[in-house]
Image 1: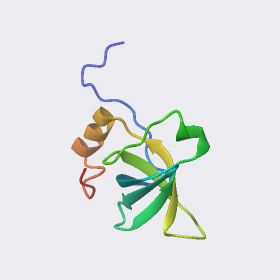
Image 2: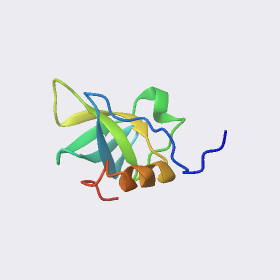
Image 3: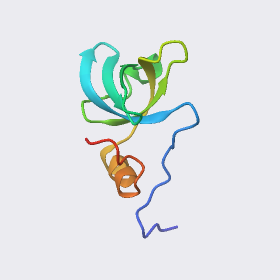
Length: 98
C-alpha cells in the first residue's frame, strides 16, 4: 500500500502528557525542557530510553509532568526530525520553537 501524502501516524499526547522542546542537556539522565504550557521543567529520561534513544538539544519530546512536583517531568517519547516537521506543519507545536 503506497502512501502518497507522506503523512505518518504519530504518537500524540494523552491527557497527562504534553509536547516539549529540550533546551539543555544536563548530563546523566536529566534534561531541561520547555513545555507547551510555558513552564520550564527538569526532565528525567527513564531507563528504558536512556541507552536506546539519544536525546539532544532542540529535540521535540513528549513529557509527563509529575503530579507531586510540577517542576519535574518524565520524558515519554522523542520525535525524529521529520516527525517534528510534520507536527509543526499540522499546527500541533506552534508554541514551541526549535
